[in-house]
Image (tube, rainbow, N blue to C red):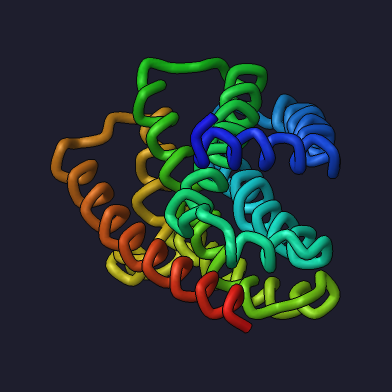
Length: 229
């Protein structure tokens, strides 16, 4: 088995053993129970925000939990002297948590309003949001050693990352939010409730690709420093 394959299998076991999938199922059921009571107009406006909040949990907080668990078990110290490359380590986290976010969110959409014609745009937006949040989660948590130490700062981190939701609900000028990390994925996810022009889609993909590069470099450096400490 390749290094990446072995790391993927290890991450999947870690997520299962620590109840990540059970927590996701509980969130899906609770969200569906609430969303089905909303009128269609309110549901169309609120659904992308609910999805993004779920992806934030599945990606940013789950990867933070995984890194802290690995740190407590001494796994990261072993990884520092193993042949596993940091890029492979990050890719495994991105792939497993991205798949979880996409599956959970598709179930949420399908059971609350049904899957529309813009399914490809929704899946792309979901995966890109998860990718970004996973990388930012790695970068933010790498210098912490316990969950209690991380929880208070994490509220500030997640609030900053969630700022595009303010623009999504029409508060403030749109240019204030279009360049922020999650604005692009949120735009792609929102296409399920209306037409998305080619220009807007390309702008969303441009800013998202730029932020992915920033987040990947930041995450790699943070992990390298953490493993060397």
